[in-house]
Figure 1 (cartoon, rainbow, N blue to C red):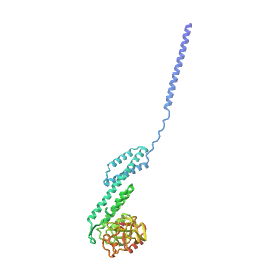
Figure 2 (cartoon, one colour; figure 1 turned 30 degrees about the vertical axis):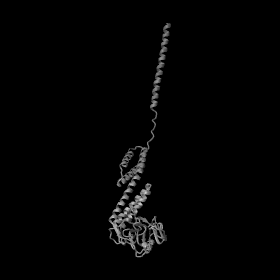
Figure 3 (cartoon, rainbow, N blue to C red; figure 1 turned 45 degrees about the vertical axis):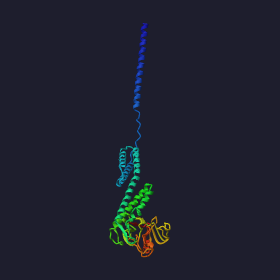
Figure 4 (cartoon, rainbow, N blue to C red; figure 1 turned 120 degrees about the vertical axis):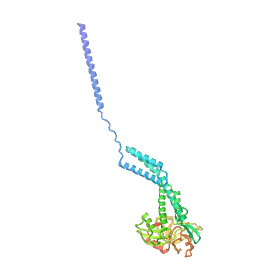
Length: 370
C-alpha cells in the first residue's frame, strides 16, 4: 500500500509539472503572436516630397535653349562650324526633357547656360569677320568699276573711297577689331559694320538716281526709315553728290551743296547726331607743323560736331566752290590753295549755309552721311 501511494503522488506531481510547462509554452506562443502583431501595426514613415519642376524653371530652360539655337543659327549663317554646338544643344534639350526633379532640371539648365556663354564669343567673331569681308569686297568692287579721272592733276581716283579699308571707314573697323577684347566690343563692331553696309548700299543705289540734288531722294527716305529718323529733323549728306538735304518729319525743307573729305581724309559715313553746337571757335591742327595735313589756327563761325573724333559740319569761309567732285583736287576760284582739295573729314559749307543749319538744329539732331 505504501509503495502504491508514492507512485500516485509522483504521477500527480508530473501531471502538474506538465500542465505548468504547457501553460508556459502557450503563454510564450501568445506573447510572440502579440509581438508580431504589434510590429506589423507600426506606422510607415512618410517620404520627403520631391520638389516639383516649376513652370518658371521650365520657361528658363526653354529660353536658354532658344538662345543657344539662335547663336548656332547666327554662326551657321555667317559660315561658322556648328556641329559641336548643335550636339550640345541636342544633349541639353534631352537632359531638360528627362529631368524629373527641380534639382536635376536646375543642373541641366546650368549646363545649357554654360553652353550659351561658350558660343557667344566665337559666334559674334564669325559674324564680325563675315560682315567686315562683305564691306571690303563690295567697296573694292565699286571702286574698281567707278574710277574718277581728275583733269586738274590728271590723276585717277576712286569713287566710294569713304568705304574702303585703305583710307575709308574700313580702317576704323580694323582699328576697332585690334582693340576689341570683350563680347560687348565685338557686338558694337557688328552694329557699326551693319550701319556702314546699309549706307554703302544706299550710296550705290543713289548713284543711279538722276533726281536733282535739291529734291527728295529715295535713298534718303530709305535710310531715315532704317534709322528711325522720320519723326524729327535730320541732315542727310550724300557723299557722291556732295550735297546736304534737310528733312523735317520726312519732308524736305532745305538743300545745300557741300564739300566733304578728300581721298586721304574721308568723311565717315554712318548715322550720327549733333554732339555739340558751337559758334565763334578756333580749330587747331592735330598734325605737327610741316606735315602736309597741318593748318594754321582757323576761326570758325558755326560748328556742329557729329563725331567725337573731331568731325564737324561747319562753315569754310575760305572756299568759294562746293558740290560735285570738290572732294578731289581742283582749283577753287577763291585763289586760296587751302580750298583746292576736300576737307580733312568735316562737312564744309558756305558761311551763310552753315549759319542756316546752325539755327535749325540742336543737340541730338540726326545726321546721316552716305
